[in-house]
Length: 393
Ligand code: NAD
Ligand code: MG
Image (cartoon, rainbow, N blue to C red; front, top):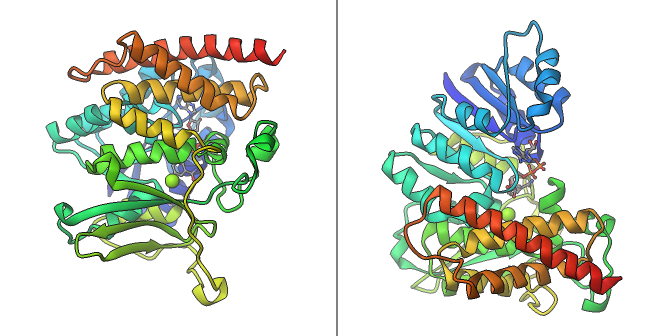
């Protein structure tokens, strides 16, 4: 039996992961499941999968979790230290599906115990890619991408020599605002940003898709995961979300990965790797689709992509700063404190302030340095958000 843990089990990726595991229960022993405020869901799944331990991220919810698990034999724990401890429990395969930089520390713990890390938590690669990949190497652990685009690239590279790659193309649906003018984007509401045309995902990544911050994170993720040079990574808007990525080789060939927009494909690929097994995902009907369209993204309307290029050029802790400022700006947009286009403004300001103050240090990356840069970036973002609010008033 394979020992499996799922961090962020109550979220969109976590639930899809449990859906797949639940179809073949006898094959898996569930070690740890983690969640946030949805104690009922966490306890339900921990009971039904017979997990060893269930962890909520919130210490104040420990009593609730204990009560919900009473009599089940599942251990209850809470808080960031408990998450790290649970991730250090021996497992063969660990799903990293916490949203945000909070996923980094448990991901590192899982790698340190040698588990194969299925990485949906792109924020940990953006914030600390060199640290994460070096930790995997040092412990002989494998990282498998669970972003649809990166899983697509990974699959297109099977049997290929990576040095023969000229470029990769990551596709973006363009989100709900694909054709909106900037003037209208500035007034976009939370409800409008949550109205994604093709994918059903957690709230935060859905808004990041509308602003293209998700694609910006993914460009950096591709650099950190595969080691491509920034100029090798291109983005194309592809409204149908059927082609997830393409790899261009030096002989001019382009290998594309096509699939329905269903994360169970990328999750299932990582779960079954290096084998392929049947997955409960729709098979694309190309004749019915009729056409697949591609267009260049408009960086004036979606400045996040330009910022990602600046982050890659700066290197060091720029990714951690970028991600943390983005998370703070996203919180402020969700809370109705700033407008949709203000998010990029806040992130740009924080990056500029911290680079001019020498805060993007290029020395050896440690978790402490990443955490400190993340913390300072959130403080600076708070200041930039307050200024943006004043301007609006
Ligand atoms: P979600 O919001 O649906 O779920 C997030 C999970 O993380 C929940 O279990 C929540 O309880 C937990 N969580 C939130 N804050 C936490 C904290 N501070 N500490 C510990 N746990 C915390 O998010 P999602 O859409 O499932 O996305 C999860 C990750 O996968 C993200 O990094 C996202 O970018 C990535 N991803 C998601 C999709 C998708 O289709 N949903 C696709 C590609 C990549
Ligand atoms: Mg993606």
